[in-house]
Figure (cartoon, one colour):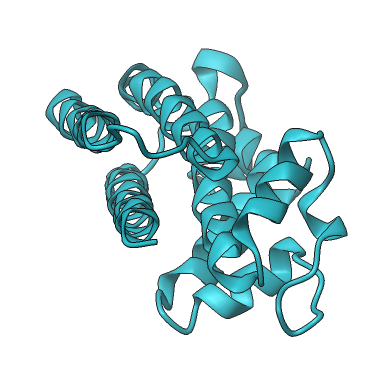
Length: 199
């Protein structure tokens, strides 16, 4: 996992370095600041993931995975609006994304962004739905603490270090999700910076 994190961090730092070194006399846009803030947040979050995954702390790593997906969704929103700079201003003023509309007049709700992005990245919808179950108290939390016991009609209840171990397949899925989210986030940021340079 450490090598995956290092690769993600290096890619963001390379994007940052390439953009900053190519600016010369070009103006800095508010969108640029949003992109840089997103990359910094993503680096901070992904650097925390190896320990959480090693400890099988699903209650911490699943919501943080949802936050990382949130960044990808918000980045996608910039591709849907008439003027990206207006959206950037809206965001840095502390306004909610859903209070802004895309070029078709649709509010930028999470569900709208998921439905729009899944046309390009089909896995986004199921990942979003699963991860939302870890953000808000739900059955996922209950069934992590209470699971079917070994004998018929029994249940195993354990919390903290006594909870059931997470299946290896779920850990693998989390790691693959991290890679997919950050790969696609980096692609969108690179695309944004290329577009800005051509203006």
